[in-house]
Length: 83
Image 1: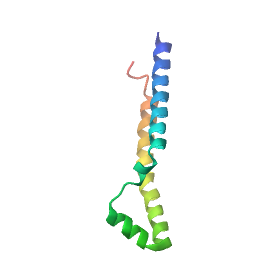
Image 2 (image 1 turned 90 degrees about the horizontal axis):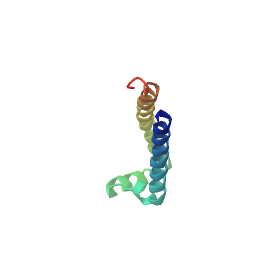
Image 3 (image 1 turned 135 degrees about the vertical axis):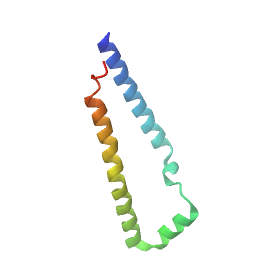
Image 4 (image 1 turned 30 degrees about the vertical axis):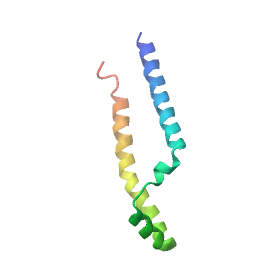
């Protein structure tokens, strides 16, 4: 019984990940949303400003992804404690 529950959860996670990737790939314009003023100021900054904006986005993503990964690693390591 325990093995079937584990496989069911694993398959549900894979289905959720697959659906998420499908939705993201089908809506490329959703990633490009932004206000007109932000777009105008970013496009007027030139190549050096665009490079700085890209670096800023990556720098802001690093702590977020680190926390996200850490929380899920902790949940994964302690998954059997609750049983």
